[in-house]
Structure formats: C-alpha cells, structure tokens
Length: 256
Image (tube, rainbow, N blue to C red; front, top):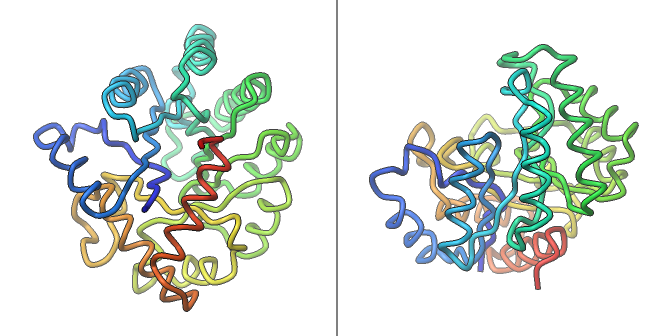
C-alpha cells in the first residue's frame, strides 16, 4: 500500500469531486495521505479532512509565500493545533521560496526560524518547501539544529551534494511527479542514489502531475506512477518501493 506524503486535497481544484478523488486514491492502493495546510484557510480545510477520513493525516505551517502576512497570533494558533490534535503529525510546509518572491527574503527567514523553534518545542518533524533557495534553507536548518526533529525535503530539487547534506541533518527526501518527466534527469539520479531508508513519495496534488498526466490536475492516486518510475530506476518492484516508503513515512511521522 502507498503513502502519499504530501497532498493538498483541500484545494479548490477538487471542489467538484473531492470525495471521488479520495476514493480513486484508495482504488490505486493509497492507504495513507498527509494533507498539508499552509495558511489560515488551508489549515482549517486540512483539519476538516483529517477529522473526516481515518487514513488522512495533517501537517500545519506557514508557507514562505505568505510570510509577510504571518502574525504572532497565526503562529500561536498553529502551535495550539499541533499540540492538541492527535492527527497533526508534522509542521509545515515551511521554508524559503526565491522563485515567486512573494515575501521579502528576511521575512521568510524569520518566519521559517520561528517555525523550526516551534517544531523542536513540540517534538514534531518538519515539511520543507525549498524553491531556488537551497543554500539558505540548508544553512538555517543547520543553524537551528533542525536535526533534532528531522523532517522531509518536500519535492526535492537539489543535487547529490545537497541530498547528502540533508541526510546528514536527519531529513528524508521526498520525490514526486518530476521524477517521471523526460527532462527530470536530476530527480531520476536522486531516485537512484537516495538511501532506501530515507526515500518518500508524494504527489503535491493538484500540482506537478506525473507523466503521462503532466500539465493536468494531479491527484493522490497518481503517486503509484511515481512509485512505478522509481522502481524502474532502482531496478526493483513497485511493491518494494511501496513497502519501504510506507515504512519510512510511518517512522518519520511516528505512525503505527
């Protein structure tokens, strides 16, 4: 059975067929999903999902896009939810995004550091968003001793050197749709070389749909396509990838 370790099933793109999408995921062999809320609205919607579906768990945090709008009250709200809700199993997604650049870099860094502090206080792993900010993300994780709780580099887009640095600070490597793209050479190389006990698979749905659905709406059931490509690259079976990534996700998120 498959664990989609990063989804946004609350997204408005699922407004018309959310229940059917989740049912299709089950039919595709997905037995656990981590849904990620990253601002006021998406966190509330994530809570609704985890309360409705036994097999959906949640991560809550504040996205770097919206860092400029993050208030102390927002962070305290996230802290209380994560502390009190048993199905909130991680903090995030958090990190830095220099591609869209919606918030000043220094503000992104401040909000990122505050959330790492919170994760350490709560003893929860971290879900990292890193876009065009590899060096700064890694530096902050190292300076704040994020290794204490570890986490996952969601939609990992770094090279092998970056991967080794992330592994050294107790982080897992999350791979999704890009590993299936014809031009996804770097992701394919990472899929071949990442240690088996540090690999996670994800969709990031509704974004980054894997081949042959690239450019269309992604959904959790498509995580099977990611697993199939990684199995091909690692010269093993899909069942082996499903089992090891399930074990890895359960270990990271402390699920039985």
